[in-house]
Image (cartoon, rainbow, N blue to C red; front, side, top):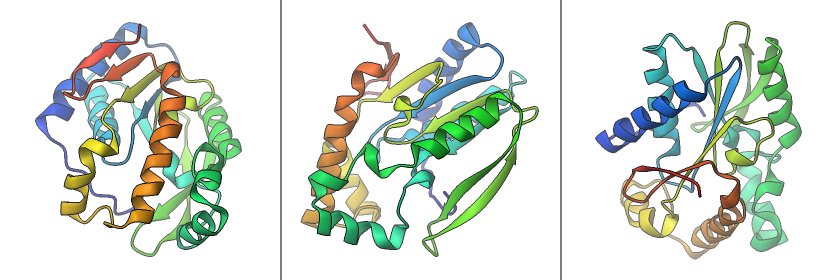
Length: 212
C-alpha cells in the first residue's frame, strides 16, 4: 500500500535471515512465500526485510500486499462492517481472492499483471501494472496470506493484536475505540482458523519455529 510506514527493528532482520536460509534450501523456479500475521505483528516489515535480503543472493523477489485486494473501497468499509455486523462481514470473505489468484497465475506465467494498490493518504484505489517476466519469487503478505493458492512456503507470525494494541494506539496506527477492537478480535479469530495451514511460525519472541 502506498504511504504505509515500516518500523524495521533488529528482530525483523534476524528472523528474516532465518527465513531466507529456509527459502534457499527449498527454492525452485517461480517460488511463492506467504507471510501472515495480525495487525501490528510486523508482517510488512518482515516481508520487506526478506525481499531485500534475497537480492544479496541474486534473487529478485516481488512483494504484494493482500490488503490491496479488499472487495470494498476503504471509505466504504467501516459502514459496511458496522451495518452488516462485524462477525458477519469481517474476515477472509472481504477479499477478492479471484484477483489474488490471478496475480499468482500471472507471476507463474511471466505475464504483465494489473493489481489494485491502495493509497493510504487519499484512501483511493489505484491500478498497479507489474511485469512478472524475470521476477524469481513472489512474497504475499497480509492477514490471511497463507490461505492463498499455490504457495510454496507459509509463514505465520504468532503475535496477536492483544500484544501489540498498546503500541499501535501510541503510534496512532489504530484508533482507540470499541468498534475497531471488535474488528481486530474478529480478524484474530479468522487468523486462528487458518493457523494449521502454516509451515513455519515466527514466535512471539521473534524466533523461527517449524510447524509440527
